Image (cartoon, rainbow, N blue to C red):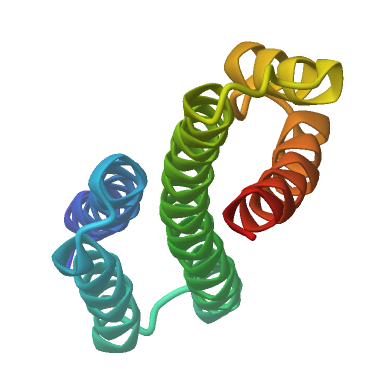
Amino acid sequence: MGVLQERGELSRQESSIQALILNARIAEKAFALDLAPQRLEQVRETIGKLNQQLDDHPTNSAARATIRTVAGTYLEQFLGYADSLRRAREARLRMQVRAQTAGDSSILLFLDQLDALNVRLGQGTPPSSDQMVLLEQTARCGTSSPSCVIASCTTRSMARSDTAAIGK
């Protein structure tokens, strides 16, 4: 084989390696956007193809060994990145459920307090100032901050004890 042919073949191999690396990065970016398992597999397969190509063309073995090491490190770090993205998505979903539950609890608390006030009014007893303050805090606060959630829990337990006292 002539020198030009060897250089041409080496250039094609290098271009193919670069294309595989770029394909892996494209699949990585797509995975970050949609967290689709097939994208994760696409990255694995592309790195596998890269390693296979490195095995098929053993010329310049020192450079190829370096590329193989870097590709292995990249794949390992990508898998850690993918795992952290999945955990973050799962945590967001859990937080959404908890926020919805807290919001629902706040609404139920507000309605419980209104029922307690209506019972007192129906009995001809005006509500206490504490009950009115708690009702105002619940209506104003909702679940907009952690302190409001804590206040809601405290208020709910107080409203239930008031309701229980009214029923006696």
